[in-house]
Image 1: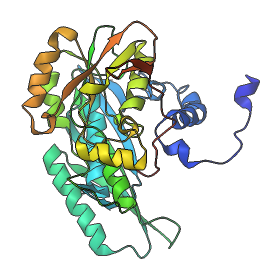
Image 2 (image 1 turned 90 degrees about the horizontal axis):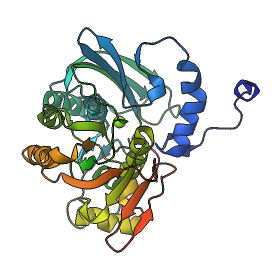
Image 3 (image 1 turned 90 degrees about the vertical axis):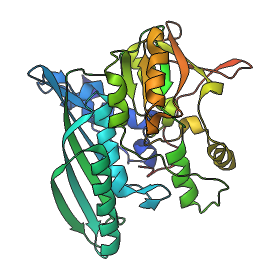
Image 4 (image 1 turned 60 degrees about the vertical axis):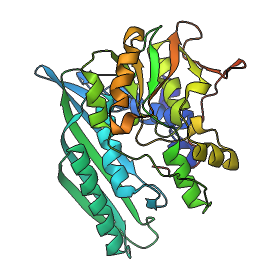
Amino acid sequence: MTALMQPATGRITLKQGGGGRAMRALIERLFVRDFATLPFDGVGIAAMDDGAAIRFGDDWLVITTDSHVIHPIFFPGGDIGRLSICGTVNDLAMMGATNVLALTCSVILEEGFALESLEAIQQSMIAACREARAPVVTGDTKVMGRRELDGVVINTCGIGLTPTLIRDNGLSAGDRIIVTGNIAEHGLAVMAARHAIGIEGNLVSDVAPMNTLIASVLGTGAITAMKDPTRGGVSSALHEMASKSGVGIVLDERAVPITAAVRAVGELLGIDPLHVANEGKALMGVRADRADEVLQLLHAHPLGRSAAIIGTCNSERLGSVILDTGFGKRLLAEPEGEPLPRIC
Ligand code: MG
C-alpha cells in the first residue's frame, strides 16, 4: 500500500513514448493502476488492448483513441492526416470492429502553420476515410503559440460495433501466427526521410486502413487473436500477445516477409526490422488447421498479397518469443521501445 501511495518523481523521457517496455511500465504505473479501479463492465483499460469494448445488445461496442505526433508530417507514402485515420480504423479492426460507426478528429496547430499544409492533410484524411468507409462526425481545433508545439498534432477517436470481439490475448498452444504483409516499411521510410537517406528501390510507408482486409477473414471464425505491430514493431507486439495469452511463440525468421529496400535501410541504420513500426499490417493468431485457408483469403486482398505464416505458439517458455533463424534458435529480446521517437 505504501509503495502505491508514493508520488511519482523524475521527468518523462522520449523512450516512454516508444511503444515498448518503458511506455508500458509508465502507463501501468500512472494510468492503469487507478483508472482500472473505476467501475466498468467490459474490456477496459486494464486489458491494455488496441481499444476498449462494451456490451451493446448482442454486439460489442469498440472504442479507441490515438494521438499522432509524427515527424516529418509528410513522409514517403503518406502524411499525418492519412496516419491519423488509419491508426484508429486499424485499432478498431484489431478487435473485430471492421465496420466503423464514427470517428472524431481533434487538431492542435502551432501559430504560423501553413494553411496549404493543413489543407493537404485534410485532403488525405478524407481520402483515407473513403477507403475505410469511415465518417468523421465531430472534432475540435486548438491553436498554440509559436514554439509551444511542433507544427501539428492530431488526435482521433473511433467507435465500431462487432458481434465477435477479438482480443490480443487469445492465443493457444498450436495456433499459427500470420503477418498480413511486408514488415517495417512505415518506420524505415519515415526514418530514411528524417535522415534524408537516399534509397535505391521503393521504400514507402505501408500506412493503410486494414478494416476491409480484416473483414475478409473474420467470417472464418478461425482468428484467435489480433494486434497491429505499430511502435516497437513485430517483436513488441508478439511479446505482448505471448505474455497476455500465456503461450510461447517460435518465430521463423526466414518466413517473415521483408523487402530488399527495408533490409538495406535497416542495415544502414543498424536497426532490426522486427523492432520497427508498421501502419498497415496485422499479426493474427489462427487455428492451425485453418491457417492455409485464412492465408488464401488474405492473399486475395490487395493489402494482403505478401501475407505469410511466420510462427507457431507453444506451451514452453510462456511469454517469450524464440527466433528460429534456420541455423539455430535464440531468445528474441523485447525492445524497450521504438528505435526513434515520433514515428506515428
Ligand atoms: Mg494497436
